Length: 221
Ligand SMILES: [Zn+2]
Image 1 (cartoon, protein in one colour):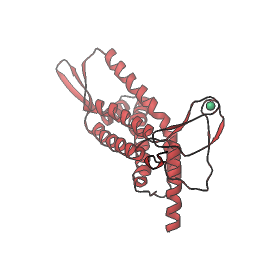
Image 2: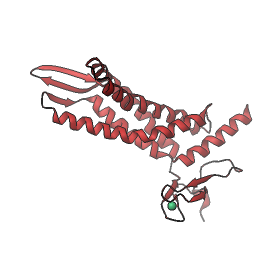
Image 3: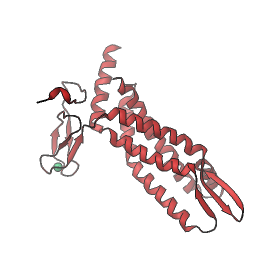
Image 4: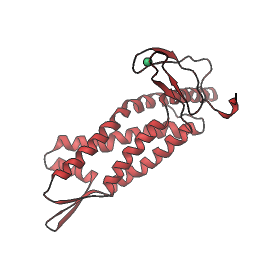
């Protein structure tokens, strides 16, 4: 009825896409849907994909915020401890170095991977894809970057779990007065913003946008 009020995302006209239902594996042709709506499985009714409103803007806004929080996390203390008047502040990189020196190499590597490396890979790949797409462009190697982005999404949940585990651990430790610092709140905000960025744009939409932008870039070359 009011077709011109709603928008679907751009995609190549002659490409057929299929998507399998996460729950019952039924294959569906990907049909373009209006902004703000979702496509559902015709067998079990579960959501196949969304067309999010202002998806790219949302992903980039969350992504840029997450990047700022990532920088704060590296600089500011994660926790400050007061053991009998002996105050010490530990940042995330400081904690990694400290754990390593104390012989906790495995924990040091886990913290480095889950709190620094994986979030950065996720964030960098998201921004690499989404910022140029805001202008209808794609950068070289967008497809492999998209695969990396998808592969690392699963780790966000692990990070949230990890953060919860650290907090409960700190509460158990009664050796010192422990206060959470700016670095801690930056990690917490970072995880929330990463989740917001990822859920801001559906991967079906992202793939279509990358394909058409890649196609236009190759035509222009
Ligand atoms: Zn289904």
